[in-house]
Amino acid sequence: MEWTYDEIAKWFDGYFEDVCKYQGSLETVPNLRKYFSEDLELMMYTAPSSPPGLSMSRDELLISFVHPGLQEDIDPQHCVIDTRKMMVAVQFKIRFTDKPTGTKWRSVQASAHYHLKIGEDQNLKIAKIYYWTEALPEDLFEFWSRHREKALKHCALNYINSKS
Image: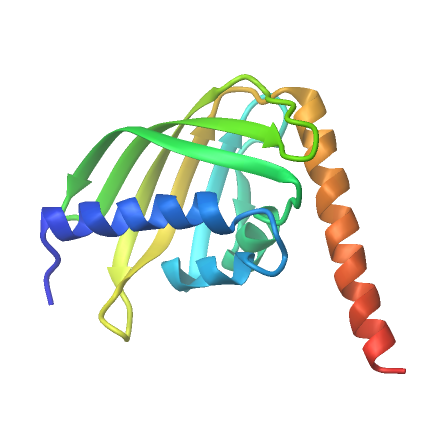
C-alpha cells in the first residue's frame, strides 16, 4: 500500500496530538509505542546540553517521554512531506510547563527529519529520526530528570513490592 501526501499529513497530525497528550505519565507513555518501529534509531542534536549526536533506541525514546508533571506542548510550524522517499521534515516550537505550579519555560525551536516505513500491520512507523533543538534552559533538564527518576523509582518499587 502506498501512502498519499494527505494520509501522511493526517497521520502526523495524530502523532503530534498523541505525543502532547500521552507524554509525561508512566501510565500513558506506552500509547506512543505504536508510532515507532522496533528498530527505531534516533539521533539527537541538542546543543550545548547534550553530547553531540546522542543516539537513542525506541525504548530509550519512550523513557525520555516519562516526566510526570512536566507538560511538553509541540506546535508544528512547517512540514515537508516526500512520499517517494517516505520522509517528513518538521519545524516546530516546543513549550514546557510545570503543571503543578504553572511555571512555563520559554518556547524553543526544533526540527526533525522522520524516515518512515510501513509496518507489518500496514500502518506507518517512524524508523529513524534526526532531531535538532536550540539549547534548552539548564534548569529544565534538572526538572525533567528529577521527575522522571521519581516516576521510575515509584514503578520499580511497585514491581518489587508486588513480588513479596
